[in-house]
Image 1 (cartoon, one colour):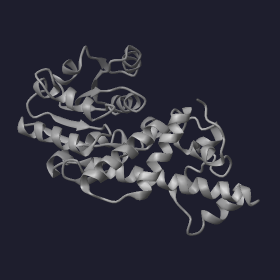
Image 2: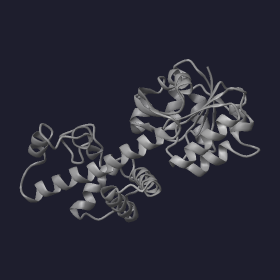
Image 3: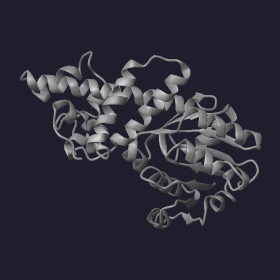
Image 4: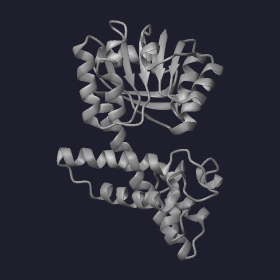
Length: 298
């Protein structure tokens, strides 16, 4: 297929590369000249603008920082919805607020385009390896059109329901992840102070009721899980800043829905403190350092 890819950051760059490797013709655009150079080396055609990329595409994938960026790129006289070919499919892989996702989906449908919101989980490692999880909100028909494209970039493709539900799934999942990482970190810090080794706590908890992904796949202390960022001085797979963004989206959505999320609110406050002390670019599992009382980088 002819695919436009707009937004070639840490996630978008490797995702576009995997589309090229799968045999798709990719027209790439980003505001960063370095990102465009990398995309060209990966085999993509460098477009002169987002509109140029979208003008001849069967599908347009966007990977942008936040809701306002998505609204601006899609809407208005110069937006993608005025540049794309009739009947094109839009796949927005950004993690944004639910309201923006549903707003853009409505605009796309009104102009005769297909649209799915398809935020991802799996971090830069998953984007590079092509093992991302996609949470896809949209109609049955649009999901059926999007899935053959998404499988070139991901391993698990879940149709979550109608427009916006992909974003709902993403923010609920990451709120749970943020909460659980804090709980795992507190348990390890308590064990340290009481004289129990990391290895023994991991052996017990990973085989009993304390088991969770934050423990068994992303353990916040070095040793028990060799692939976790704790073994690389918390070099990011998923940064504190990214976790804080998703937690804030969860609290915005909770407020709009009238849902009580006290642990989500507390996790948001703690990650805001972690970012404010200068650790925003470290992996989110570095929150164990703050819980220990260690000083931050900033």
